Image: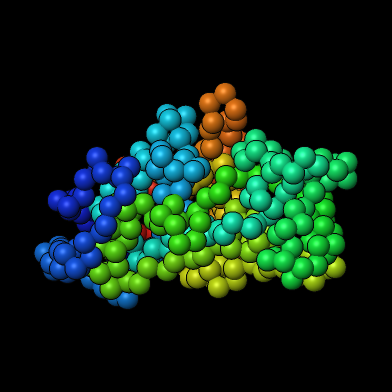
Length: 352
């Protein structure tokens, strides 16, 4: 076991928990000066000097999922889940700034014409499906309840509408055969260039502060911009091949390799029932193919993630909890952000 002499730090005075649910401009130059002073004051070494490498993977901590007035706010059981999660997440980053070697936030990234957005589909009456209330199944396509909107073919398939139709049926059939969630039509969200796509301001500030204090470049990972497939997991899209057997997407081999290089990987973000669970499940597949014992290097911040809950409509809490129980059974650790790192089972660093 390696000992890394880094103590838990106080929370910097610029952090205000009351503002985590708001959008604002990060004062980069001010924070850069403060971060350098903070590193000097607390004896924080550059991340390159870490004896033990700790990675933090943050799934989709973006406005679109994390703020109440945005498109797909993850309220969880409390109704304010993602906001509460991000307060704890920011505090966790600041307290353990000298311990976290590198941070990789994922960025769900979409444009209007994608297979899970309303404009992609149309019915005989010329209506688009109601977002968050419509699933597209193979039967719905075969029965003519929903068909691909001919108007999108020029933008997505070079005008080849029949090819797009074949792909759509192939796609939803593949989802069904793989036991995945059916194709859900989501509200337009995480729109590239829009404010919903941005990281939560308080989280962005914490990541910038970490980057300067530790001389560690934040690694932004884009996912979800392929119009022909969903991409809940950052590690691979839901479907990799088209109806002709040719690849339409590929797994994120670079990030997978990056995660394997750490002595411990900590995971948090939104939503526990969807993008977080899918990412962890894919990571576990990679781990088990390489060395099942590596699962013990993964730590899941349970109090920094919430499931999708829409009161009176849908509640994925049970599915999310079952997924995390499977991850724990495979050797991963379920932990709380408020616990000292040296209390985490098998954590490779002892704080002194």
